[in-house]
Amino acid sequence: MTPDERDAWLSALDAGRRAPNISATYFLGAATNDHWFDPPAVSATRAAITGPTNHVFAPNANQAGPIPGGSANPTERVGYWAMEEPYFAFHLKGEGQPFPNITAEKTMIRSDGSARVRFHVQSPAPLQSVQVFYSLPDAPWPKRTWTPLPAKASGGNRYEATIPAEAARQNAPWFALVSDNRSLSVSSNLKPCQP
Image 1 (cartoon, rainbow, N blue to C red):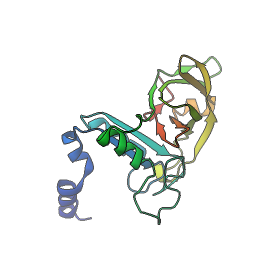
Image 2: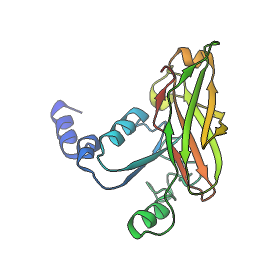
Image 3: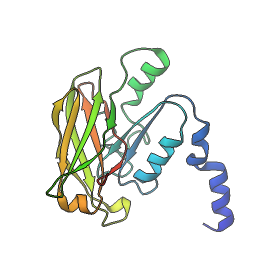
Image 4: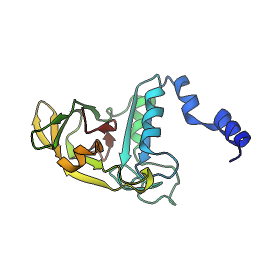
């Protein structure tokens, strides 16, 4: 874009400039390898929203959400996520239950250089899948590979996983991804390995 076109686009269409005016409950569904909205941009937009927010990152996907409650095929109902219906039913009509919510805790670097990541999950429904994904900072955001790790329950609705030392040394970003038995998925905020 020319500088004038860029300024016009930012002024009229940029979500980040509109986000501080959003005070309603908001949910963002995003793909980690999206060519237009990378994880830091999604995280910044979410942080700027003044109302309650929740979100999900679909790992290793672009313009799709191949996760429970997502959209596996971007040509089918473009922009649609299956989780939208229960989300709006709960927040607009008071039907059903809220989505799970994840709160990440401080990362601990172990003596072997690996990173122990911990998070707490509030969920009204039983969880079907609890994972952590991390990505080495060795490529631009849309080309990164997100590596899954199983997360283990550690009591009190807390879970943890260990990110390998090589990734921790590179301060690899990570997030938790949980899916419940209603096929609803949410993620934690994107976090660095280093505390």
